[in-house]
Amino acid sequence: MVIELNHTELSKENSVQLSWVERLVEVSVFLFLIVPSMAISFFAIKQGSLSFVLVSISAILRDLALVSLILFFIWRNKEPVTWIGWTFKNSNKEIVLGIVLFIPFSFGTDLLEKGLQAVRFSVPSTPLPSFLAARGMAEFLLAFVLVVIVALAEETIFRGYLILRFKDVTASPTVAVLLSAGVFSLGHGYEGSSGVITVGVMGMVFALIYMWRKSLVAPIVMHFLQDFIGIVIMPLLGKG
Image 1 (cartoon, rainbow, N blue to C red):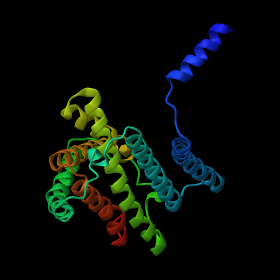
Image 2 (cartoon, rainbow, N blue to C red):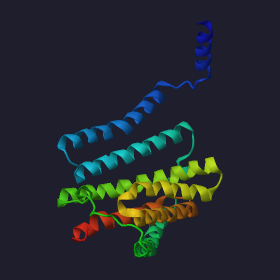
Image 3 (cartoon, helix red, strand yellow):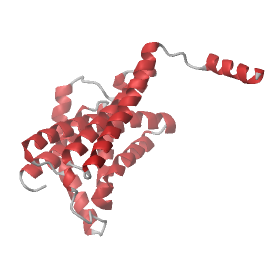
């Protein structure tokens, strides 16, 4: 009993003493991370099927929660947010650069995916699920909000934060870029192997631009345009 008591006291002495505000922020971030997705899952099960609205709201809340967690880590570590590319210096120039680079980027990734399909890399065996397609003006407005938040959040997550941490762990920028691109591509299995590889290459391009510019602005613009065309413009034109 004495040994256990001494061990407990020693653990308390060696632990980080958090203030009330720090504890509140920590539990708030944790709840924000898990509660919305649990609630969305509950309502989706009750409805018996998924819808574009539920999937979009779930994705928005998930991405906002993950960015909140990243900002919490940055705050706790007393790191400047500029380390993950949140810098708006010369932002107008970066926005223009993103728009200009998107043109060859879009053509290049389209050619890559078609080339992979031509050499028998797999494509989706069935059409994309209906819950990925917006219908009606209200859903198209939600789709616009979705692509804005996804571009901001995913570039913060996969380029800014993961590259920073992978560089810390591996001491290799090249490995950091490859790992972040690999993780980025994992959520696109529904697009077949050709889509997964193409998304991985897109992730590497975004990462290289981010590391070149030391800013997330241009990659965010490119990511937004890519999703905006695919999720909003093409369905509006009846080609989704």
